[in-house]
Length: 349
Image (cartoon, rainbow, N blue to C red):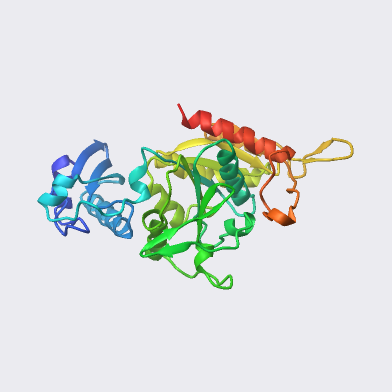
């Protein structure tokens, strides 16, 4: 079995990215837990949530596995100002990243196992419903390849840039930032790995967010680079898993839930979208995509179904165009308001 001494010896060659000193030398290894061949570490860094942190994670995992561990779990926190001064780092009046405001802001990642289940529709309507409940809300369209939030919310303007700071667009009292604001003519995104992580970090660190009660992250479907980056950057993030009633969609969505559980994120619940179609004429419900997928997924993830959203579409208001936002009096809009109440209750405990 690997020992604490072997772990520290293995990490002597890994340097803190900003300070360029060994993690061991600057006492950055805050905690080591060993259970059999599993090692859990808490590491302090000069700056968390950066692309450099992603690279450091790979170095740490490689070094500790090289010393004999089978699996390595990582958590991060920031070095104190006193420690930064001691080791030659920058302190003082740098603009704080949103990642440093985790005590004030509840981060909610909305994810799914596959595309086409209405994850972004759920994200924007949850965000607007929370705002209608009086909460201060922001949304990051983190689906960098399939960004759609600006179009769904009827946003035509672009964020203002003042100096080195980006000011989010405000729509329906929700602060919005999206990759779609920075791409011309709907061009495809061909970035990979570290570049994606850096862009996502910029959304946290270079955007001038106002005070936030909730930040909704509309993640790409599946368990790829961006989802992994979010899990690493936001150790306190909570998650909502979106599925349809179909058994296959629920089966695939379980993978996203499994990632959340492994990274110790709290799953707030499951949203079953396209749950049924209700006839306006007879009131009869037709279960077009089957039944039970959401309940089965919730049971598997040991959580609850937050909402069952029927098939439908908002009433289009040409004067206040937002093709995916439901009005508060719309039957589906009322379901989202009830869902927002549940989210507020679960995150206030």
